Each structure stands twice: as C-alpha cells, then as structure tokens.
Length: 373
Image (cartoon, rainbow, N blue to C red; front, side, top):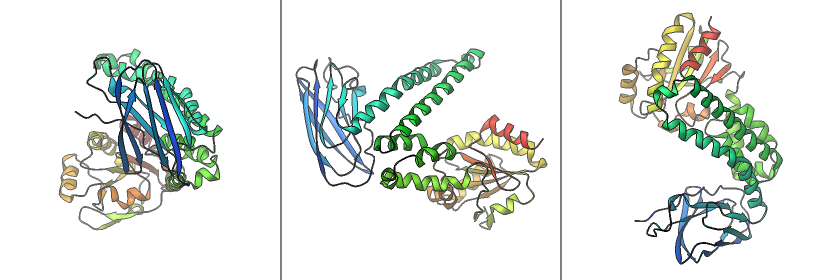
C-alpha cells in the first residue's frame, strides 16, 4: 500500500527567474535499495515523485521560481530493518546550487547544508527544537493523565510549565525574525506565529521590522493585508459598524445592538461547529447572569443552511440577536474582521471599543463580571 510523505508546503514568495538546484543525500548506515517519497507544494498545487536511494545515496535535481520547502520521507514499509518509517522524514528550503543531506541512520536526524536559506532554517530549528521537544513531552504526559490527575494541584504546575514553554517558543521565533529581516525563512516563521487569529500588538511590530523586499513578496503582501484587517479590531479600537440579516431576513446593524448596552459580545459561530456548540452553554450562562446589567450579544453565524442555523439557536437556548448571510466561510462580516476560525468573539464596551477577543468559558464570565460590577 502506498504511503505518502508528510511535507511542509512550499511557501509562495516573490517570483524570481527559474533556478536550478540539486539535493545530494547520504545516509551512511543504509544498505541496499530504499525508496523515498518526495512532495513539492506550491499553493494548492503539488507534485510528488519517488526517489531511489542506493546504499544510502540519492540525488534529486530540479528547478524553481519561488522559494519554499521540499521534503523527503523514507517509504519502505516492507523492510523489517526500517522501523518507524512514517516518522523518518526531512524538509529543507529550495535555493540555487547544491544542498546536502548527511546522516548516519535516518533522515530525521540528518544534517542539512546549503546556502543562506538553509543556514537560516538550521539556525531557527536549533533555537526552537529543544523547546518544541519539551512541549511535546508535556503534551503526551497530559494526554495519558486521568481526569482525577488533571484536577489535582500538581497538574496545575504542568499547565503553568506548558504556558511558560509556549512563551519561550514564541520568544525564540520572534528573536529569530528580528535578527533576519530579509530572510524568507523569517517571514515563514512570522506567518506561522501569526496563525489563523492574529494578535496585532505582537505581530505588527515584527512585520514592520521585515525588509521592504519581504513585505513586497507574495507572502509578505498577504500578511500585510491580514494585519490591516486585524488593526480594525485591536484592543482599544472602535469596531466598525456592520449590517447583516437576522433569522427573519430583516437587516440588523451592530450599532443597533450597541445602543443602550454597557457591554456587547460579537460572537462568531456555526451550527456545524462542534467546539462552538460546546462553548454555547458558557455563553448562555454569561448572558443569563449579566443581561439585566447591560450585557448583550450579537451572534454571527457561518452557516449556509437557514433551517439548521435556526434549529441550533433554539436547541442551544440562545435568546439574543442573531445574523447571518448564510454563505459559510464567505460570510462578509467574518471576512471584514479577519475571522478565519470559529468559535471566535470580540467583547466591546459601551462605546464599541474592543476590550477582549477569543474569550471562552470562565475567562469570558470573569471579563464581563469585572466590567459590570
């Protein structure tokens, strides 16, 4: 049965003239013939090829017009001496000239040498891998813990350690980005750090520190546009007004909901979204506790089926304002404010200024309570 390689996507950057590259591999302890799978991605397109390694030697030559990554994976499940083949993979950056992969017994632990891009990538990996390994270990231990163990005071220390390591990982990436303003590797790291929901205050300064060349690249331009959108809803900014259609298909504006409210939650969800439905009881609890004190909600649904949308509102007991254009991920309000994942929300004060985002469960309840005492 074919097994396909897990590869990092080629990250589209500024177009350049077509350039040639050669990858030379040598895994010293491999004997005989081994099969490697290779995949190159460019946007939504990808190609995949099989590369043969003989006594650990393999060569791959190609051309590229945009910088990005390419990956190899050992694909030899029939060999009893090749254990954990699905995990034996390596990725590297494409750049002109010769790139070498040199290892003793696996791709995963092999060393990569090439030009400046791969030098940068190796430096970033060296700075972040130890932290990532600790995070992975903590995550695995947490998954094995019982409910009783997770409720113990000792487990709280695990949570604190995990949060500390996440902070260290973010700091390591940010430090690399600041020190490599003209590197596509740094821009790729910044995009990953930004994630689906941009923290404008943290990402914007790092983006501004990138070179004009990186900002003008395809990825740089895309990230710049996302930051422009995110600037509309950063903390302390008045959220722009929007209009959509309620369950009776009558137009409803945000400013109508804000009028007379001391605190308003703009809630993004969908009936088909499991995490949204799991969070709805917490939102209902907050509404019931604070509505009489001036708390209101307008929920924006990313549904595309009016029947399922309305049924979910009733089933989950959500007695507040609801709107949707019934266009799923093409929902205009979601696009307007850069909402790329649900559940998500914005908490607004009486003037419509953003005072919180992405608040869930107890954090949402406490944030509302603190402002409506």
